[in-house]
Length: 430
Image (cartoon, rainbow, N blue to C red; front, side, top):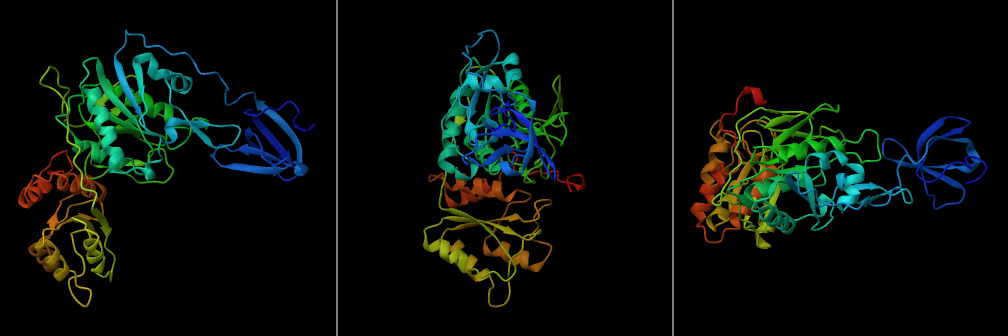
């Protein structure tokens, strides 16, 4: 560092004054000699030419603490939670040398950032892989499900937490909802939108609330995270009825066509709806059912779309399609791009085609208008008020059961297996 800011070190919170403005951020290691690099509170990194800097003032020394990893041991006096770390912002911290993030993979590293959860439970860390959620596939869902079932069936484990990236988290929560049958204890997926180095991080409250639910009596697959933009409480949300609805807000996940399971405060849990209760005893063992057919597609219908997209996938060996149709469940049924004939031909050869609503809110109803009746007659399976992503996952899980007949598979698609349908859907959910 030059005379301008000679007392400032990497990791300090600094205020940089130029002729035009004052900028505050975490001082990072800069790859260029003539530039000072800082991380702003909004998470972005910016470089400022040293020639334009009038003053660098230290606001806080070591704002990002460079502690050595703590030696961590289980107390053997608290309830045990297994923490499966798979990646995402909640499992990372700022690297002051690069301005990027690095993974947290050990209890000692986690303890530095999330000490509160260690006050209420012994945390055993399991780290199968570290991936951004967009890089995951059904194979990763199967790995997570297998690890979760193993933990759930250990007598001393009270519950399981899974940390995960936000963007495709609702696919994983849906997959676990089907792949873990006879659920006996809580399975909680949690996340953060903002990293631990930011003052507005949602990570600590989300993880603490996740731990509270993992110790609760609620034996469900749940997402737990901020209920609002404030740090007041979190929601526990059903795994098959929740969706990411905002790119950056802390309360990004919303329950669609249903209600949250609970509100979680630091000092209490307020139950909002009925739930499956924790099961005890030798017979109460979770079962792994991770069958999955990868040759499926989620297709969003748009006006004028050619049904050849279905033929293209069919030639690639695809076994089923989840189609995002209009609110009530329509696609083109007249003119040169009529979908009816292509659907009939595919259904006749054993392909399963199911419908989910693009509108997200509300329920499909093929019997209001004639196009819906035609499509239903052609063989489309209407999946009520299901989320499109859940429809995709459920289709893959059902088709993965090779021993089920075609009719059994269609029946299973219409069966409410993991709360994916809300049979009492009313105006309050719109």
